[in-house]
Image (cartoon, rainbow, N blue to C red; front, side, top):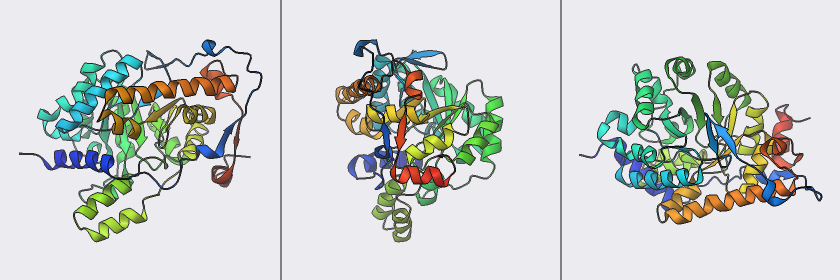
Length: 357
């Protein structure tokens, strides 16, 4: 018998692939301009954008974002993504592991990622409603052990839990439990949003709780309110669908969230949410991020062809290299220092928040 959680995971995949679930508002990268350097004093082949994460050397500052698991179709996706991650030497996150924690028979749908990527960082994943349960610490440990993970992602999906008709908007005690996890687990704890961004205030609280990294996952990419809108509409749940439409574009734009987090903490910052090319990654790093992450473009292609998904990342690497060349940035440290001009609504946001003078 197929569990309710497994059914929901399959529904999330099919909805994301078949429907337009992108935010109507952009991530904000069009409001960020990297200053062109007409005399880069570099040869293109000298540029080095390799980096490190948890002691692993990475080919590029790019992460294959958490996507899926818990259903047979997800196993195929995770296996293909694992192969790409291993070949291109970039980290990979898996989707929420709740389904396999509740039903160990589904663990293979996540474990295939590690099976195909034995020598790069793999990130386990669990949600807030799971860690606040009485056995939350054990659930978190089970997620890590299941895939021999190098770190645990705790995903913050308050918006999705509100809109989802099966949702569990139970977030009381989450911060204290995250703090507990940082002491109880043997791997680093990272926190990621799921499309609504992280504010300065939240970032400071998370750093004090002991997290080592924050994935901002801001507004501008996939809207999980949109995903749940379509799912509610299919069930003829008119009120829930209406709420999903209302909050379709709720959140902090990714470009603004990068600055919110990087200006207020010293944790590693992952920029995701509408990251679609290497220029976006370059802009994110100039704003203060350490890595860029993407999911939807890979999900849509890897479900058809692993080769096409690999080509997306390879092209992104070349775009990043070109952006670094055009700014005279021979390495990522130089790119961090690259002058950037912030305009439009992102400038207005950051000024209103006291983050831009």
